[in-house]
Length: 266
Ligand SMILES: Nc1ncnc2c1ncn2[C@@H]1O[C@H](COP(=O)(O)OP(=O)(O)O)[C@@H](O)[C@H]1O
Ligand SMILES: [Mg+2]
Image 1 (cartoon, helix red, strand yellow):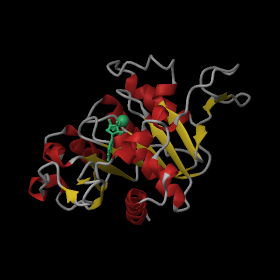
Image 2 (cartoon, helix red, strand yellow; image 1 turned 60 degrees about the vertical axis):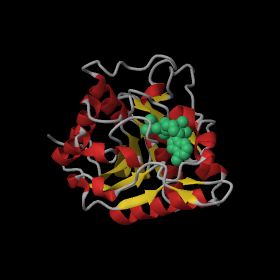
Image 3 (cartoon, rainbow, N blue to C red; image 1 turned 135 degrees about the horizontal axis):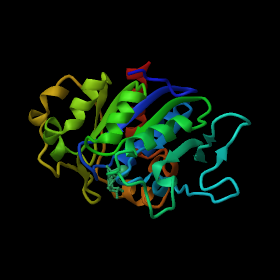
Image 4 (spheres, rainbow, N blue to C red; image 1 turned 180 degrees about the horizontal axis):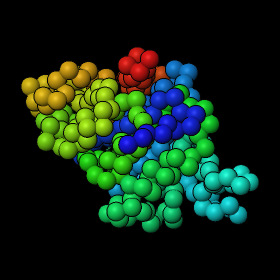
């Protein structure tokens, strides 16, 4: 299988999880902003056909203009290119923007993977240092097609403490292994809770590295993110923490994760 690089993209990075709802998109959006703060040119491609919520979290929506739903550039006698939307200086595209807002491509369709890969390829990203790809959770055809057909510099796995042990049995790890895509590290989300009254850190979920899957034994933890209202409130209103409160202690955590990612890559 020949993997054609994405034009203009220096490093494509996948953000993956064993299951949904662990904060994969929240981490993707804040990590993208953190990498940007470190001086990188960053894009996000939302490939999560099961729940493409990057548009919601960034407040980007379709534009219906004479060119169609998505801004499309058609150079003379050349294939069509899709121009990404822009938000907070990030280049953004989502499979959720392909069709109307309440009708997404059927993830069960056998061609779903090819639609995702082809859309990613048709994008006019410009020059990017990092393209973060928000993968659907677990393993499936879109993930498989993406990993086999797009060269990726690595994958970042988002987990919560209680689903860490389940990652071993999830097929997604095998998928990355088979595709030869290195796991750059783990981001442990909703890792602990900081009590607003006493300021103390509480481990809400039974937390143990003993449960860390064998396949991830040598993988570094890039960061641990607390369960915090500030993280969900902003993100669900298209105001990500990294943009709204870039100097908060929580933003510091995302900046440290970004620095760790950059170090792994460079
Ligand atoms: N660290 C956190 N603290 C509080 N809420 C969080 C945190 N991470 C994610 N959430 C919330 O949990 C929900 C699921 O997060 P999301 O990023 O959509 O997960 P996924 O992309 O893995 O399905 C969202 O409502 C989000 O705001
Ligand atoms: Mg998501």
